[in-house]
Image 1 (cartoon, rainbow, N blue to C red):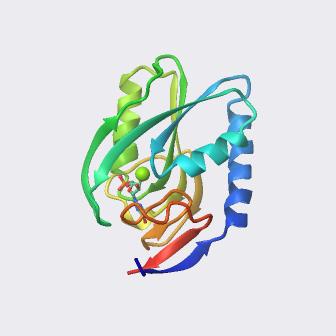
Image 2: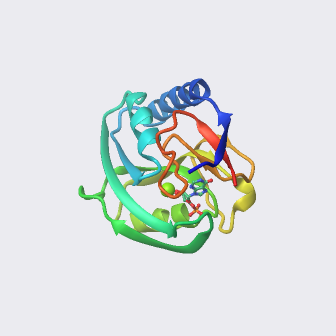
Image 3: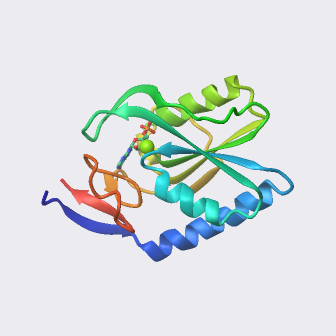
Length: 173
Ligand code: IMP
Ligand code: MG
């Protein structure tokens, strides 16, 4: 219970970036409806704040995937633990993630939603650790690129803790 956390991205920086991303998304989807798919649980804080900054009509649905055990290393195999409820066929799907690390999760989800005949599928992530990529993924909207540190807060956890921190912090393991 006593890891040391240092601030990497402050609450103010996050809010400013999310407002900027919301504006860009609203411009890009002008005249359309966006179907946000929030990847639980990590992306929940980010997806809600982002949705508040989008001015075109928004539908939000949730999905839970798993590629991690309880530790800090990805297993590489992505599974859907709970699926969306609203059909995506013909919708403009915007998959919203907390962080892209190996790329396995978003790479897999992109195929899933294309196979379900969405009208369009775009990817949006709050954080990106490009140095950790195992598979190439084209991300449409990225908040911050960060170095290879294990981060928590704003939805991100370390063994389910620290999701409620209002900033992005680094765990000194
Ligand atoms: P990927 O499939 O390897 O790209 O991993 C994506 C998922 O790994 C994210 O949705 C997070 O849940 C988790 N993850 C990756 N890096 C971190 C981190 O630094 N802190 C917390 N979770 C992480
Ligand atoms: Mg996640």
